[in-house]
Length: 291
Image (cartoon, rainbow, N blue to C red; front, side):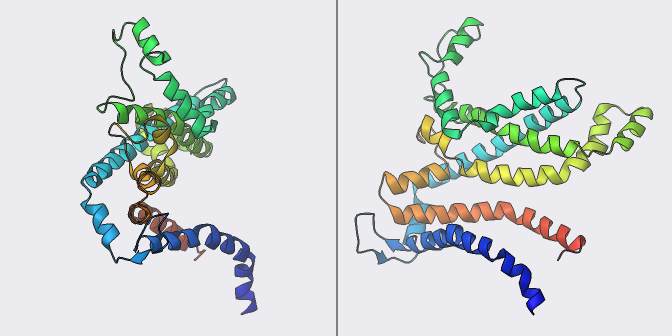
């Protein structure tokens, strides 16, 4: 029994920290989601599932869900394509790999608040440098309302988030490419296979575990990303996602019950995304004999 308990004793400090930092806030939030009251109302009463019903029946709810799906799916897809493309490009360079890696990682290193404010100023319709460049090269005669036009505001923020988050894909794919099967690639090349065939049948299967794990991480991060949207549009102009609307319900509308209920719904959606990855992880551990 002592031998079996020893590993768990070593893990105990981390478990305690996780329970205090993660477990307690989640349980506390779930409790608030069943209460009726605001921050200034001390007499909070139990109202069963009324907060969840009010959230689901909210006319904005479905639009926010759709916006969150577009924001997440489109963003993660662009991040993946750009990140893999950059990694393959740098991997094939003969010189300057270290310099290119440093340059391409800079957007990811910049803090999120700095990124949001920087792009907000650059995308201003009157004095922003983006409109200025577009006017100079003749792509448009009128200033584009990147953040004010509800038809393009969300897609503009998706591109900005792609610029910031794609370097993480680049970092993960670059690390995986260091152990690519060189012998198989050389044999396929000698047999006349082109780059497309080598990538499809050799490199892509090698990268698939990293792509899967990175995809799950970036999906969770993108779905919950708050800084960029809040500091640029505050969720207006069709850019309100689950994380932004949850914040607004609590600190603008003073409705902590509905905000907590929406946070629980977001947690469920994120958990659904994580299920395939967790199952794959445990199956790999069982295959390796760890479990």
